[in-house]
Every structure is written in C-alpha cells, then in structure tokens.
Length: 188
Image (cartoon, rainbow, N blue to C red; front, side):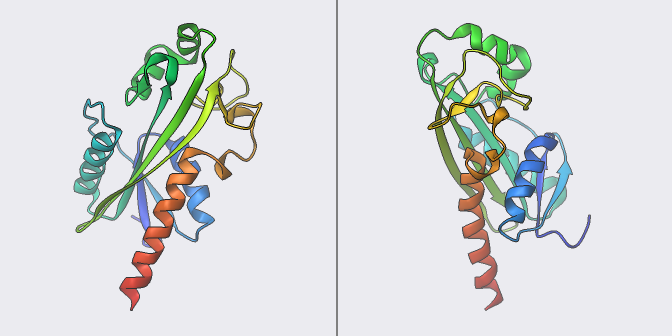
C-alpha cells in the first residue's frame, strides 16, 4: 500500500471512490483505494450495515479506512429500496423503479461515511431531498439518471457539479471536519 495516503476508501465500487477522492482532495485529505468485496449484512438499518462493513474492511487491511453506504428512500414506496438499494438496482434497475412509481415521486438519498481504525468507529450521515424523474436522463451511474435533487430540474447524471451538493458530499464534509480536527489534536 502506498504510504502517502491518509486513509483508504474500501469498496467494490470504483465510482464511489472517484467521487469520494475528488471531494476529500478539496479538504486536503489524500485517499487511497482498496477494492474489496465486503460482508454486507441484511438489515433495515443503514448504520448497522455501514459499521459492519467498516469493521470488516479494517480487519482485512489493518489501516485507517472509510466506507460509504447509501440508500435511495422513496416516500410513496414507504422508503423502499432504502438499505436494499444496491440489490434492487442490480435486480430491477432504474427502469424497474420507474415502473413502480405513480404520480407521487418524492425521495431522498442518504449517505453514511463510516471511519474505522484501531480505536475509532465513527459514522457521519447526510441526506438530500429530491424527486424521481419520469424517465432516465443523462449518463450517470447507479440511480443518478433518475434522481433530481431539490431545487433542480436536472438529474444527478445531468449535473456537472454533483460533488458540490450530493448526499455523499455532505457526509464527507462532516467526516472531513472531524478527521482534520482529530489529526490536529494528535499533533499537539
């Protein structure tokens, strides 16, 4: 592993890593990538899933890590797919979600960033309200072509500045504030 990284992003999803790296670069945090498949428990709690993944990731690499877990929660579907978003995306995709919806399209994205090292297990969460579009728009990954953030007319896939307003950005900003303060405190 490269020594010049402050910590590692552990995931099997390189898209999430690229977004996290770009965001954390703006805070001066150097993020490495470890592509690993992590144990993903079945739970109705995103936090429980994220913390379990973070512990698994740390046990495999023994370096300070972060993982990100997120979910798309659609109001008219009682929060579905929520913590099952990855599975639902792999199974029915964006077209399947669009077929499930009627006129009520309010939704939110929730992101959890979980940090783990020898002493700490800490989770930072953020949400972003929005709506589900009536068709796929733009060339993005995951649910980006169907999620329209609040106060926008475009999907995440159509927006150039997604990393400045996304649920992931908000959670990583919270994490960065804590992490940089932690580093500063350790230097004293």
